[in-house]
Image (tube, rainbow, N blue to C red; front, side, top):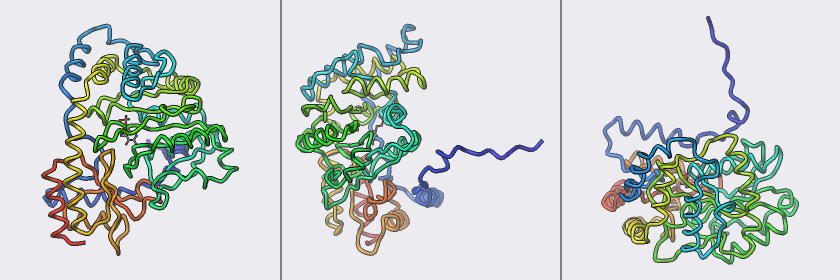
Length: 391
Ligand SMILES: *Cc1c(COP(=O)(O)O)cnc(C)c1O
């Protein structure tokens, strides 16, 4: 018996082309040739989850009361730990019962929120280059992304004034991400104040992705959107334990802020997923209650790596600024290259994997992204290899 043509839905057919396919192929070929690859392409912490968090999971996993379906909105004890952490870290007061929602990793909530608020044809304001989940989540809900380009000229911050008035009025939702992936740029409280005004004026729901709020350097702590007056009236903030505590594999995050927006997201979730494993939430409580020495150590490690890589790249004549936060380095490609051709050059001639900037959206053309999720020694070696390969 023959089959029949399996046809995917339009939402899958219209996904943007996978720009990393050519690079992936080159990488596989290099590995097959036995090249010792230095991977500066991955945004995934290379260090292990701290021991107290692992022990907490192990203990909680042994307790049968955690083996059943968790509550949709998350354990109240976890949401209380989130509220306590927000108070301690940002001096922001949150009501654990309805201003905090547990997520199965922040990506889950970032993707799903569109289903709660975006109808077919609705406009979503999306920064580009940026995290691909914002435009893809928009398109899965039938919405249309309006790109807010992040360029050197605008300091890699969305230029709110340049959004056409009619579009701003039509927009349902706006994505922001500080500290930013891939540019590492931080938004100030002054900028957030302008965002609140923009949102009030145009009735746009603000969704701020703060996954990297705890990965910062030189002691300069990024602000939370929730610190600004009126933020809770207009939006929500997404957080993750992934980057702060080396827990990318554990799948736990949370959203805080406007309770109506969170209720909308919660409605979607209660119909699509069944919550986050309680033992993981117990481990999350332990993580959020750790004192700052753990995260201080992590920041120091990334900062040391940054301070190895950046001067090395500058010595080679590359145009790059030291990131103030996050573990990304946004490098301007040298004359004569595009994002893709420079990525290919580094891979072919130096065995270094990086990510072409245009993979994060067209305005990322002319840049590549390197990550700091590799040891200082390997980063120093990467610089040596680029020197040998030439630009
Ligand atoms: C890593 C990352 C996240 C967090 O993902 P989780 O699903 O919480 O692991 C969210 N936003 C951005 C921009 C990221 O880079």
